[in-house]
Length: 217
Image 1 (cartoon, helix red, strand yellow):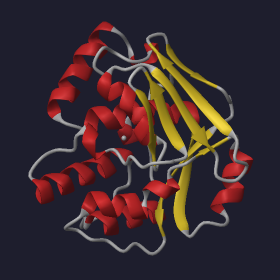
Image 2 (cartoon, rainbow, N blue to C red; image 1 turned 45 degrees about the vertical axis):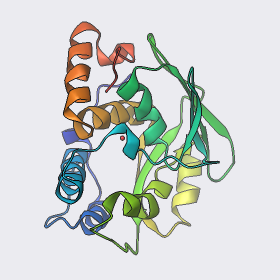
Image 3 (cartoon, helix red, strand yellow; image 1 turned 135 degrees about the vertical axis):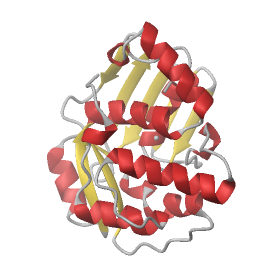
């Protein structure tokens, strides 16, 4: 898996401005690290806690699923099922339906690493052009304004076709970087106990080797 630092993932100005409006930040985040800091600070301010695995955007019949020993759970955006194994240590398969072609891109997550079905797959990150932010209900607002624009594509051509038609500011990453981003997001965003366990796991097994025993959106 590609080594990815959140501080090295740059957000285009339009995406950053949308996130700033969504979270009520004074300045637009320029990197994924700043975006995560805004999310964490917002949840802390509103709910007096850090985000937990229970905040993942689950939905019945979603296009993105994690299939593991405990069953199948579907989600609104693809980063959440990608983050789930790093949060819980459960290995399994992420199945993601692409929005234009309706193809299935899979991510096999096990202790040996992550195997993709499509080498040219892309993951998008985005936010609505017309953000209607409710700063007292930030998690629910993110579901509405951002999660639908975090998608998987077979290749860049499918992403470009989709991006041209959506009313959102978006950017794209190679899927392998997206998996690493999900791992880093899980470690940086979710509760301190899981973050500490992730750091311990990575001491024993590098991120390139897949999930640790307790895991890392």
